Amino acid sequence: MENTPPEKPIRKVTKGSIKSKYDVYSRAASATFSVNVGDLKLKTTCTDATFVKGPCLNGIVLGVEKPGFFMMDYDLPQKAANFQFMSSAKISGKQLKLTYIHAQKANRTMLDGSLVFDPSNKLSANYSFMAGSGQLKYSYIHQGDRTFEPAYDFKTNSWNFSMSQKVYGADTLKTSYDTFNKRLGLEWTRESKDAGSFKELQIHNHIVP
Image 1 (cartoon, one colour):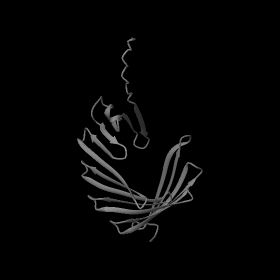
Image 2 (cartoon, rainbow, N blue to C red):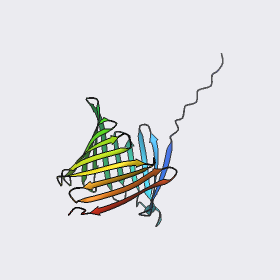
Image 3 (tube, rainbow, N blue to C red):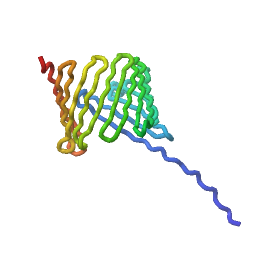
Image 4 (cartoon, one colour):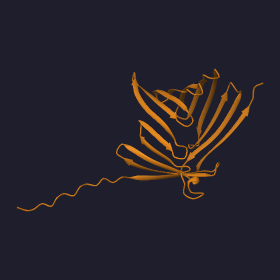
């Protein structure tokens, strides 16, 4: 009878990733290291403030996330936690998503929700309990490249309107009008892997006497 060598245990390889970004306007850099542990994702974020005057706790944020369910971040220098809980359900075949957000240091609590009727029509709402402000917005996408978004602001009891148009594939032109402040906004954005990304925003105040 042959002796069968014992099977070697299968080792699970834990995969990690590093993402970095640089903000040209604030001239600040940051990097996030994340690793998956089962259904959870553990994250550590640091900024250039962590190393500019020698290694320190400035800019370090620890986080744990279960995608689609919850997120929690803890700012080490501020000793403050941010919580975010997500939930979804089907209502008459329509997708309803709810998100609860609480920022401990800022004492800010928000509730976001969206109801998707079809790929072209969506109703969304948000409310900040601390500020007592909220907004109800309807989004309609026409033929995949033009978006109309009327919105109602509960705090100012006024309407806001915006329209965006995709041009040349990666560019988007957007115009908006704030009826309460009588403010017209023009925005040009580009998101391209080849040509890069940018955002140009112009705001004109009191265009109506």
